[in-house]
Amino acid sequence: MTTQLLSLTGDGSPESFYEFSEQANLGDGLPLIPPTIERVDAMLATVDRARDENIGTLGPRGGLATVEAIAANAVMAGCSSDYFPAVLAAVEAAADPAVRLEDMGVNTNPITPFLVINGPARDALGVNYRAQCFGIGGRANATIGRALRLVMINIAGSLPSIVSKSTHGSPMRYTMCIGEWDERNPWGPLHVQRGFDRNENCVTVLSANSFVEVGDPWSFSAESFLMAIANSMKATSGSWLTVGTAPMTVVLNANWADIIYRAGYNDLSDVKQYLWEHSQVHLSEFAKEWQEKLSEGSRLTADGSPSGEGYLLCGDMVPMTSKPENFNIIVAGGETGIHAIVCHGWAFERPATRAFTLPTHR
Image (cartoon, rainbow, N blue to C red; front, side, top):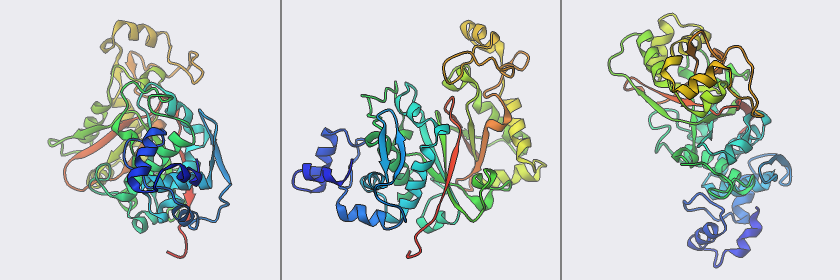
């Protein structure tokens, strides 16, 4: 999908392009910006990459994610040209086989890529990492996440209801992108946890199968709040449970991250261990069929075969995920209220991170 499509869009007006894009299955139902040559070239001017460079071959269609094609989708999503280095990094990370983007695009569950942006570029681009970061939080969050979704539709071929067979879908599939409040993560921000330098600009692709808000007006201690988060994770069904190795993402607000850290949880592994242990569910809480499958170790691997891994049950307790290391802990959101967000991840996905550089002419 390139700028050649413009020759098919009638009089070139925004309304005409919107109508064309709906008929051609190019969008997500919301209005799109026509990807004129001038607009695409403005995107390309922010990166030192050849327009025909293939960033990745994306399934299920096997489409070539060329830099130009990604730029056209970024235009349609409503991105400022300054956002394009972040968009390109997001697509590069999503193309990593660990992310399993094709599975996200064809599965019956509502899984979606979840983008987290770290580094100085957050402020330079206006990426929201404070109040409303998941909501009506600004153009950068809305359009960078949407650009990846349009890449999935127009390049990868994950056409809603045609190829993408999510039973109910999810509003997260329009866009799922936030910044992290790097300076307020006492354990170090996500990209640093993943081996990058604090001053690097990075995009990490996580996954989100759910979006659970933890509201806790009664807790005054770290353990109480962590217990509330752990309790909000508990489930007796879900695609992450049928596999057992899914990543879990917890988004803490900054004040409570500080409280937890000062309470003695100075090592992030201790936070992950607490959440892993206290989010387990007793086998008796599951339906009979689930009890049978869980007892015989029937959680599946990526190819659908029994995993045979010994950590599926802890005695009579069922972990939400196989090991504490599968938890991602990030800090974002407003400072008011005792709140956190929990996202159960995609069954087989593993995060991927890519660095990017902003143009010097900004």
